[in-house]
Length: 434
Image 1: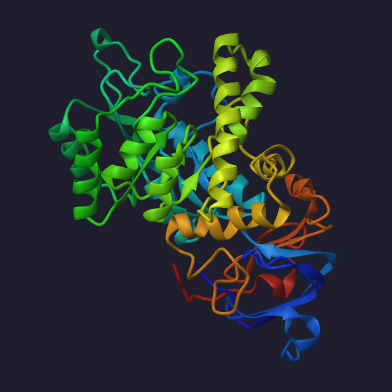
Image 2 (image 1 turned 45 degrees about the vertical axis):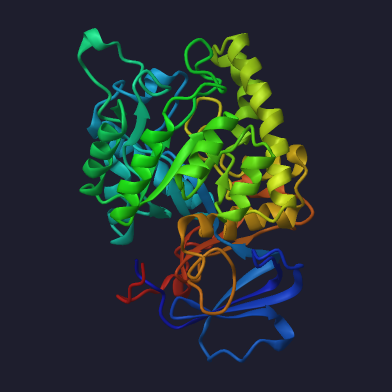
């Protein structure tokens, strides 16, 4: 991905650097050749060269680019699980995924971690974004997922003989689990996504207290993936599924809904990050009826909402790492509404604004394994910066409206926002840094 050339000064705004530190009220950020070289009080900022580009934050907020820690680029207008499989051909899904990637960047999300993707499209989307072929967030790819036979993601009847290979590998036993990972190794993914448990979306067969993989299958996935330098994560709602994942050696937990004391202790001991994807439960409860969700499904989402919120509060209080995001692309959580997750964590879960932003920036970067490069506005990091009109500390919901985004910067280049394309702000060269 190209980096900007020259120097850019961002000034006249408060700085929230993403580390959880208190805001700096009158701040400046200096970017040199796409890298942050200063971030702090404007009074202490070094002089910038004559002719340097300047971005006036207009008394608003300067913060790190947001990170969607569980994105599904191939999901769009999903109202039932079957919509995720064979509803559209791969060509159309690919085009829609490119639109979703552009939308995410325009919403202030400069990086994202895939939570599973049809046909390994995210692998190629990542390549296209890094080569500046299309706009989008810096991606960590996961490709197709792995689930036990008869589990949450195995819904096509066997007699149809159409399989599930476009979205998920169905495995029976440890050997098939190893085989599935070995197939993924060739595809260029970073994360192996699995389904240790079910979900409220499937109350009659694989609800949120049901296991969809055995411990031996999960351990086989981890052994094989780690042998090839890949990381493993899993959709974990049931307590036993969370425990199995942590004991099997998983590198991250998705959801972590029903977390007991033992699970929390394991999570902290192994420094395993978690992406709760919790707003989806709230929005399913609030809007499910208009999309045809049954009361049984809605009641299940209510249960996971309450338990998941408590798990998040416990992980935060204990000093664990969390990223924010998850499962956008359903009818009631369309792409482009990602920032409502942040408002939800402040208003419903009870996180402070600073903790919420830390999870949505540095926490996501840690999940991606890129905290040394992105996730906070600190010297030495890539200049992935968001400039917002308004006081985010006073009202975090202003991040939900793209009209409030003055500049969405990747590597010092303004890619989106009302200032995008205005002269020197967008100069770039051929220097690259992944």
